[in-house]
Length: 155
Image 1 (spheres, rainbow, N blue to C red):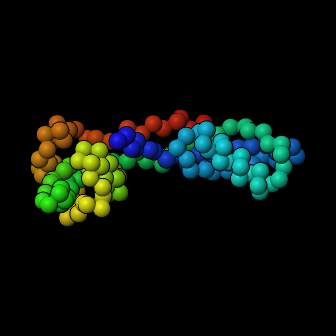
Image 2 (cartoon, rainbow, N blue to C red):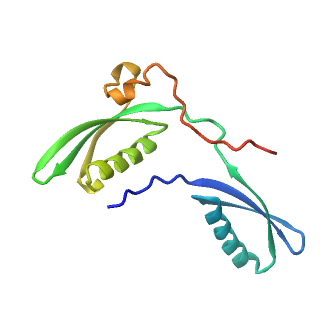
């Protein structure tokens, strides 16, 4: 089947001008600016009943702190036909939530197993000494921060 794409949700602030020259600001969570424009227009038209709205500008609101990356180890059990297989995986993530969503994504795309057949035994934040997987060991002595694309703030 098609791979589910890992989608990033952004918080957009959009500014509109009404025909009475009032400035309206609305914040929308969505995957891209086009979706946020469509959502915001629908909401504003319902709320204000004013047909004439002029879009002025938009801004992506980012968490200003760049997330620190941690390495997590995940011990899992999954069912394959009649067998229960145990696996150990490692992920570089900025939180346990991020680690689990990467894990589900990985399991579904590599093993083609649904999350229902998956049992999470343990998730642990690893120290540099505990990292075992080669693809993560290469980063062992680097301070990793996750790539965050921050629009320069023009306030």
